[in-house]
Image 1 (cartoon, one colour):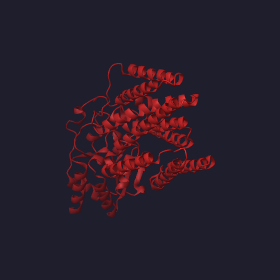
Image 2: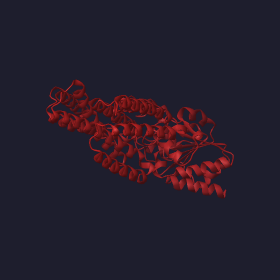
Image 3: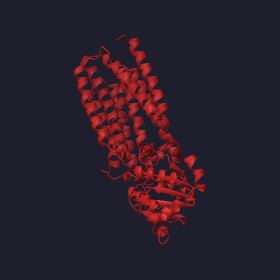
Image 4: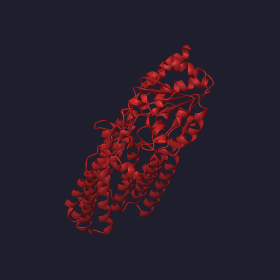
Length: 461
């Protein structure tokens, strides 16, 4: 196939990727953006497969069949609540694939007796380093999200020094790969060391920071693919990897800003490593429990109602029940909106995806900056499973681990209803004075059951 045709096809695919990213920046255009991205990838894969340099179509077809089969099964079997884990795994597979392809290209060059240019050796070393960190780092993130290992930050004495030592070892090994590319052993040692670095870098990050980590690892997987693109001299891989890497970094920065923390603090802060306080003094004698009937009476007369979803809503699969309650309130004349904090849930956009799955209108979703001015005029705010993102300590206690973090000003509502199984703290490990506030009612129950009980009570009212 002529090089001009290949480059034109890659250029077309790249333009489609850019429009895909643009489309996926808003819920209303996300589906179209996803389609454009898939079309761009199809064009890129088709042109690459038709390139005469491809030798064995049988292996490619076999890979497509196996990969598509696994992907189809996972797409059907994985629940929406497990999407963060799924994304973490896909990030890891992307990093591993990039590192292995770069290693295979280096091995092929050695076997064929080819020349080692600086572009090949430097890009191979970077692909191995970033790909290894992404692979094992993502597996650790998966283990935390799946609760196979503790979701709390694992901190130990001297961890920063050990991390710095392994980073130095990786840099030195990168130097050996560049200086002696004919010795393939250096590359495999680099891959092993980078995997260890990935574990060390991720194990010390708590569950509260997982949305940021997932976004960052996604960026890493793109950068690893970009480096492999330079190894293979494939323009499509370079462009696509750059777009993924850049978009991931931008999203990571946006999320750090939403938490009023630096990326360094997220990576090295050990946030959520231990419970700061059990909150006995804050809660004792002040918490007011409510029944579904009492909450239904409040909602009967409410003119504006806010729903604040969190990971608890995802775990209890309460999004459909919440939608039903919202529709019931709207039919009774109330104005309903959903307040979404940028780091609610366990991955970027987690709450948006869940609510979209339940056919909640996009117009009803309000970002933090849009929702906060509405709370003082809101009759009832219903919190389902959210904790740290509504904790007033972020505003009032400069010594709190979440001090300065922008939160949803739910406490300014006339009445706050918190649906939660217990008074246990969130990922930050700190008590929430909102639960003991004068205008707060606690409804201790599973999220889905609680909302359905409120619906039934409202029907009978």
